[in-house]
Length: 216
Ligand code: UDP
Ligand code: MG
Image: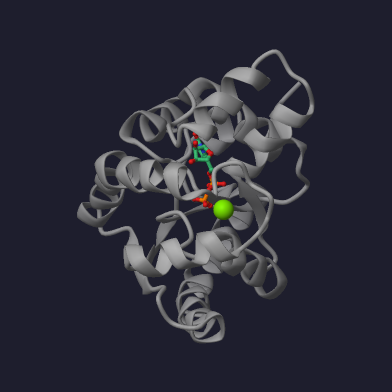
């Protein structure tokens, strides 16, 4: 049986559109992804939410994932990539926002080699640490990692492991950086401008793909 992620999808940007949404903890990735879903019809896949669902499901990896999250560390790539790949295969959609992933270079390399997918672009929510800390401490989502001790560890992991991934995409010219310290609505105005200017390009690539497949 042909999976959505097989052969035809190994060419980036043809069949599946993937946008990585990166930024520190509390930078507003999840909030803005919900807005993007409403306006632009993407499917939102939060790596953290998938991992938390895996803990809840009582899977054999659950306790391992739970203790890593509590420590603010990064779950092994194979686990996270499998969850993301599965979620994409289950979806009817072909446009995905992957939020909070890749968190380190190994995550990035594993995703690329396992799925053969490269992101169309990467949204980076740039926010000062004191603002992120304030948001995390006031969001009350009942998360085990939103306490000051784990937050400090998450910031450290972000600086050491996630910023290099952001630098990588910047060097490839794929990074779209947003000032995430502004109020939610103002940030979304900037996000919309990015999607409006790139959707034309994505749409024309899709049209080209459609023409290629109907003329053969
Ligand atoms: N996490 C991980 N790999 C991922 C995404 C998340 O290991 O690809 C773990 C990590 O421990 C992280 C936690 O899940 O600190 C919460 O991630 P989430 O993206 O939900 O937090 P956010 O950054 O949005 O506050
Ligand atoms: Mg999140």
